[in-house]
Image (cartoon, rainbow, N blue to C red; front, side, top):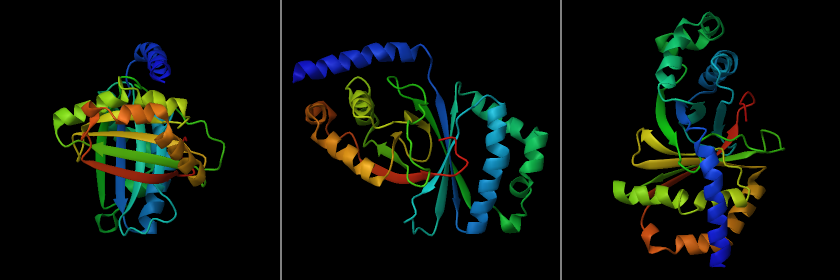
Length: 257
């Protein structure tokens, strides 16, 4: 069994060498917090008609937009926008240029020129994420179901200390956890380290599934896999996560996923 596991890790390493030549992506995960359907409608219209077409014109092809699943009963709602960049300096440059773009000004007026007494959101929280060494770039999921059925699972792992956190990052990369997800067809969208955000030290990743039943079946297979049992039993990876936040999301109709 150990031979097959080592062989799988070796194959992953060869694949990673090719991936790393492409360079890493940086991700901006922008989280809109709001309370009303009216606010949501303004944000949706802005993203669909102004922001996402603007980023496409800037050469960013794949923007993800997500909200919680239908059973979300939180008072504060959240809409997640995932934007991949090839260089970290693109983030401020593209964001700043947005405000001088004539098409954005026209099509995003309801959002950009909203009266302070009727703001389209209560808060924006932003995470800047750097792609993992062994999975440096965003991958579009290969799913066939409708956007209503697809499940996007966003996970956040905070570390108890910076040193223990680094071991969890290693577990995903050199340890072979990314390879395990790939072998079991988890349709991962991205893996990355949060390099700036409200929760640190922290890594985040997103996997995707045809529906909730498909998601549950994948995780059951994962938990019973010999490679995972061997990897999770290593003492060097004990106590590397102090908090795990798991979110079940669905894509908005205008999302590129």
